Image 1 (cartoon, rainbow, N blue to C red):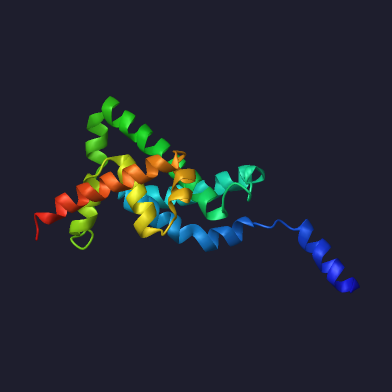
Image 2 (cartoon, one colour):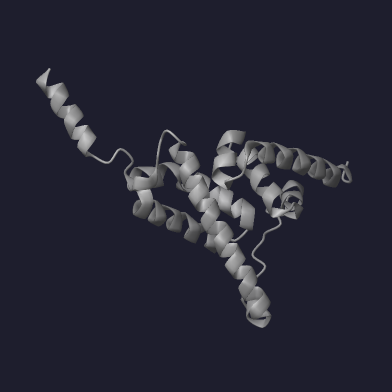
Length: 173
């Protein structure tokens, strides 16, 4: 009986969510979400690292009563990505000649699948909902928490984006 108490007290002293374990568990899913959203491989790698750096800095803010660890990490990654994309868009407007020179067409023909192209044509808010729903199997409640929007907004964005995707993809049928 004493050994169980010792083990339990030892477990309580340890971090219940070690960054290394979380990284191994969620790095691929977060990378896939970010990459599918922005189609930028290097930015996706950077954002995965930035997500876990931010987590290690702010892990005491995680409340398992409010969300799951997956939701918490996806929300961090999403916020970092949106900030990075907004910054990139501001730079693109301020220094368009630098932006054009630094862009390369790295997209292979395999990556130019019809559905992916259609998803990329969706407005950013709708694209995020579609990717989190269909590529990451998150619930609408989890998506609401990640994006920081009401559940009703998730539902309406999902409905609108599916309607748009159907319309875009019907042409090929």
